View 1 (tube, rainbow, N blue to C red):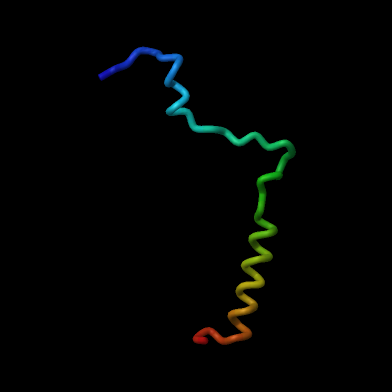
View 2: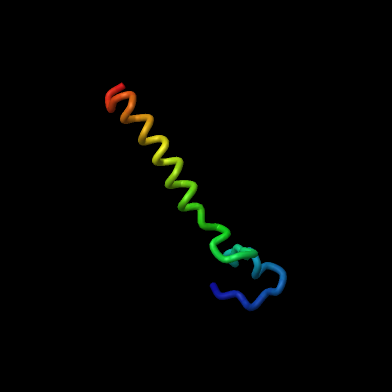
Length: 50
């Protein structure tokens, strides 16, 4: 069933786009890498089967 253009409900199916104030503002790779490194250091010190 096809529906005509509706100005009241068209926003329900739109995917919101994040607007960043500065380039790479949403890039958390450095923080994630640091946290994963800390977690992995903790596992090697305690042993893999602890």
